[in-house]
Length: 169
Image 1 (tube, rainbow, N blue to C red):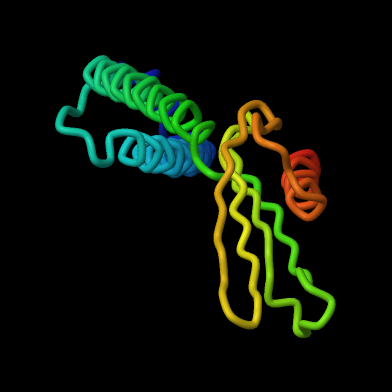
Image 2: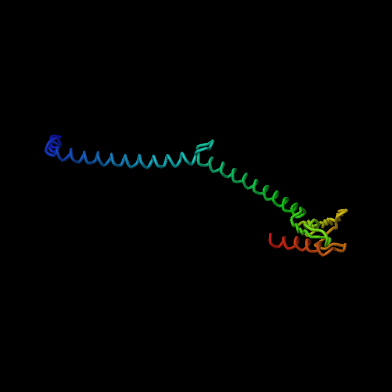
């Protein structure tokens, strides 16, 4: 025992230095671990933010449920879009319009023909002929871009404009 005591007293300075270095090393390791733990804690807090549960398993299940709900909503929106697309085919989408003088002694292009067509080129042509004493309006049906009634030159021009408009829009 005395031998140990003598060794201790002979090397006290060296022992203190080694112990001090070990303490500094342990302090550095502690600081490093605290920084890492702080970083991990911040990431974990961000991960569980807005969650009702604080377990990773619970969070994953919540996210899976949210994804399923979003998929269901996407399917519903796609169905609505398809419905709207189907309905839009029957809306007036193509318009051809022309103004003209029906009579040589009239001015200001007060007569007109307008073709109103849907996506399948179905609709009608309306013509209004303006004269000094009277004005007449006619409507002729159009099916697949053609009318079963004879069309005037102006009505054909309005119909052609409506058809061409569909190709460029």
